Amino acid sequence: CAVTMRYLPLLLVSLALVAEGYRDDSSSEEDDDDQGCGGRESLGDLAARAASRIDAQAFRLERLTRKLEKLQGQVDEVEYANELDHTGSIQARIEHLEGGECHQDEFTCGRDHECTSDLVVCDHYEDCHNGHDEDVEVCTCRTKTGDVFHGHVRWTACRAYPEGELTITITRNEVLDYFNPRVWVSASVKIEHDEGRQHIGHAESHDGYYNYGHRRLVLQPAEGDHLGIKCEFFSDDLADCVISEEGASTDCAHVRIVREGHGH
Image (cartoon, rainbow, N blue to C red):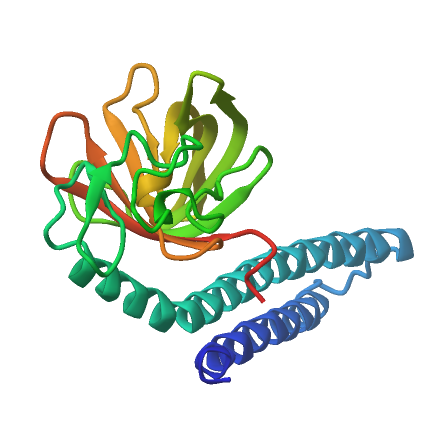
């Protein structure tokens, strides 16, 4: 595919670098022999030196393999997200046209432009004349306990981070008997990025909720932090998220997340 072919040169260059490393090591051994001042290393010394270099090359190969596996995972997720993007965009446009007369805290019932509060969506009572607020598709929670989502973060403000990876793991999913329109969730959010040769990552626990009426996951800032996350689901497996500071209108970062296990 086109995306995979785009990374083929990187793979070839990486393998070439490893091969060059082997050639450099071989040249070094020959130079050492030529400059040995007439002396010869013992068989044990040669074996120890060879073992050390083999270990070093094995480490380099292992590190390269991990990077390539990570890269392949990113390519797979991008391909899957692109496949869903067209459908999600059409769906979003339809909802925008149908719900243009509804307020931000209201749910659009359908083509007749009827609106109802998102606080009564999926409460087991039909508030829309067509019953759309109680449809199974509407009342399906996309954030169940154990669900994992991955995405590529692009920071535009708030933090001086390079682009990196974000992982959201849902750790709690609870529906209260007296208030069904919200699903109360907890999630572990891990953000990773590379700085030079260092791989930096940190995880925080967030509490929040899933809003049926807008298919929206809202994660409040973690304790001691000011960054929250809001994700709008276009399908069961795909959502667009915005990271922003609490009480501010500036978007700090954008990320499209894909459910783990659906990236192929």
